[in-house]
Amino acid sequence: MKKEGGLEKSDEHRHDVSMQTHTKEPMNTSLQFCPTLTCSARGQTGQGNIRVHDRGRERYRCRLCGHTFAARRGTMLEGLGKPTELIVTVVTLLAYGCPLQAIVHAYGLDERTVANWRDRAGSHCQRVHHAIIEQGSLDLVHVQADEIRVKGRSLIAWMGLSMMVSTRLWLGGVVSRTRDTALADGMMTQVRACSQAVCALLVCTDGWAAYPNSIRRAFREKVKETAGRGRARLHVWSELCIATVIKRAEKKRVVEVTRQMSYGCVEQAELLMKQSRGGTVLNTAYIERLNGTMRERLAALTRKCRHAAHRLGALHTGMYLIGCTYNFCFAHDELSCGQDGWHACTPAMASGLTDHVWSVAELMGYRLAPPPWVEPKRRGRPRTRPIFEDTKPKRPRGRPRKMTVSSFTC
Ligand SMILES: [Zn+2]
Picture (cartoon, rainbow, N blue to C red):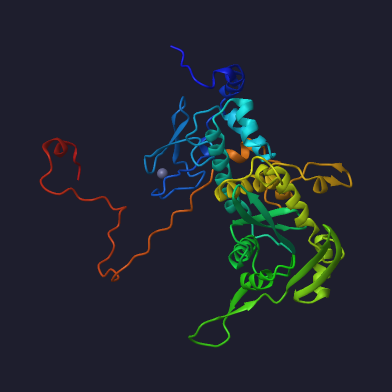
């Protein structure tokens, strides 16, 4: 019996979409890793411990711990019943700034389903961001940071964003109800996580007073000054430069720009700007350009719109979805135009984090490895008796059975 429901009218279209999902990728055990947290081989590929468990349901099995897991485990698609193509299409539309209501009408989906996919995609992108960008230990050289005021439905929020100028890489963002020190600290902690160890760095921001101190707090290293016991002091990076660009506007037009150094010297800042090809004078133009992209692509950020954000969480996940697709999936015009023609290049490629333009399906299907298993620390009194060697076969206890006596040669 055919099930009657509100989605009947779009069945024809959905049939076309689901037709494409039958081309399953061949199951490859060498690329898989065990996701079980209690397994000693978790997150490791090429160990030979993974076997195909069920080709029909696309499940693998770990020989070490015996657990089975789905091929979609650890991706954005895990546990979703809808066709992959449809989910990827909806996520792509969301990443380009298509309002949720438009997708609901176009595909006949439930509004809660689309919102759930957006949140799932955003959370997945956040994990990918932590796993790839924040583990990249990049030579940032020149960073710009700024914040956007977001007017939601009975909600005012602030979205702080930061970027690496030379490769246009989005380094992360923080959404907060208040524009306070915690917002600036959160942003700078993210920038610090992406950066390599102590290096020369220029950070350009607007005139918000919280920035200089937050930047200094984030870029400090422990230095042991006295011999023997005692606490190490925290020292700000010696080659850190903090520049502030203050714009004064009259009738929504910029009439005056004040550029000043809050920390470090101008010569060093100019050198770093030249190195990162980030202009000849102190500026925040690059992050403002990224703010524009964010406003364009995150539907809830559009000014005076009818689909403003209700929840802070939706802004947070939306920001990660836009930021991550911007970094990995969409070619950047400025980076792609070279001397020998146009070659698609994304900010992640320019930063050396990947070698190709990712499709949205690839990003959503990216499997995140759990942290490697570490042997638990032994607690308590150290062992006095020697550790029993597992490799040595145990001598059978008690009287041997009659069956084994006949085959027992000794
Ligand atoms: Zn396992």
